[in-house]
Image (tube, rainbow, N blue to C red):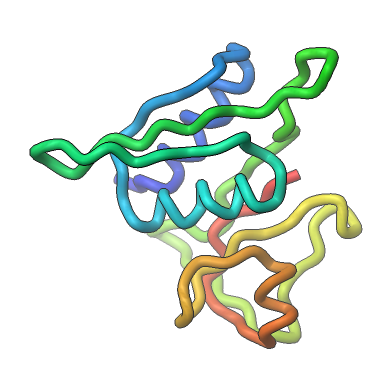
Amino acid sequence: MDTIAQFLTIIRNAGTARLEKVDMPASKVRAGIAQILVDEGYARSFKVAKDSKQGIMRIYLKYDEAGKHAITAIDRISRPGRRLYVKSDKVPSVRSGMGFSIISTSQGIMSSRKAKEKNMGGELLCTVW
């Protein structure tokens, strides 16, 4: 099962339903993606609560004044059946710079903007705009 795709689908569905917050099982990869969404301004905040198993992550979603979800589209690119890796000079531009990609690098999960600054490539996880 693709846990990253499940994570993205939960966020997409919660935004469509206009939920204030959404809970899901936590992991380091999910927390890294959530931190990037917060840093880029697509989510208000997130927190991880420890429990006896793997923990629960709560993400607080962000909406504009009209009540429209901040994330227009969030799509999984690399998947378990087809991994997609990019070199540092081939990091894609999403919607002519209006969006960004999330990349898993050797130094952790980072946005495409940060990966370009650090001249890093890696696995292209998803695109957000």
